[in-house]
Length: 127
Image (cartoon, rainbow, N blue to C red; front, side, top):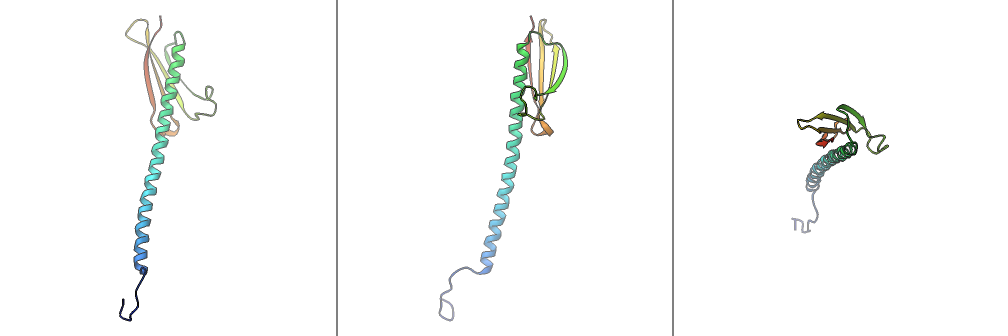
């Protein structure tokens, strides 16, 4: 009770403002974490897609009897129309130190540098 004999109930304006400031700070921090998580998810998905596409390109090379040595590049629009826009592949075929075996390296680069490029190398017997 206060001096006049009535009970004080509730919060003062200052207490409410301090509580709202604390909540606003906490929500701002959580929103920042959420935005960072979304960026991480996009980067990891892009890298996973690049790995999938690199493995797919290597499987296509395995089905060929003897790919020619050299370099080539392209995109995945003809194989997957509209599904992987901006993904580019680079293919490097070099003879290895073992006769009858070639070294095949596929590098897939995601669009606009999102995520990391995936690079896979395998050795293919040509005879």
